[in-house]
Image 1 (cartoon, rainbow, N blue to C red):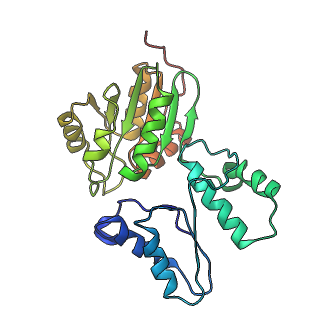
Image 2: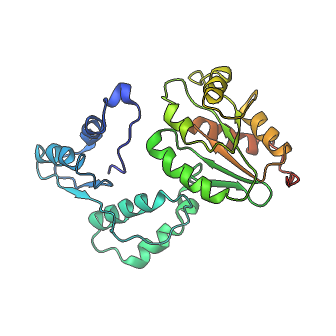
Image 3: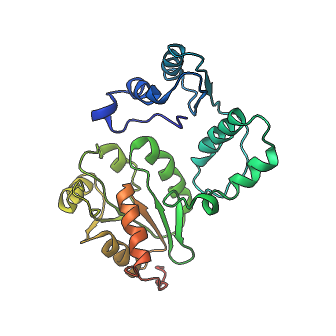
Length: 258
């Protein structure tokens, strides 16, 4: 199953979406159905070509109007993922009933322990949301949802990235009104916070440089922001979850800014 094709890991997968699609189609196997969460006419022929070279491998693409049921996953982008999962369930087990699919989609987090995808870490004041979107393909819809959620609220973002990302387009979609608490995830591939802050300032963003992910989140909370987004990298989200687990992030309610 291929959920989507975005411009990421291009040093390994190829320079464009068609090349990346061909690499992803490398998981296709003879006599195994292939579920593809893409309806893009640029991409589907690539998947069909690879499938045609294999014995009885058939592609099932997901269209924009395929049925979707409610889910406990809160990211807007999960609608497409849910459609792909529904198709996979029906192809793999034709006897499956809709009520079984509905029940499963309403318990994804409980059944799988999934974290870090529009993960609401705190509700109220402040609202703290973490998401592991880390390329433009994933970043744009997440920022659209973030702009809707933060409307009318004094908001900030805790962001860090790794050093092999083209961050220009990501930065372009960071809301101008949000103060960015720049940090670096605790991995060797992290972009140093000084370099990251320089890129953000060059794009006209207000930046606070921080020593760690936990430091960034604590400072954003102490400054009284009503809504805080955490992300930019899966590693930033992982550090955030670990910080909550280890008691490194204060859960006290911050005063609202008027």
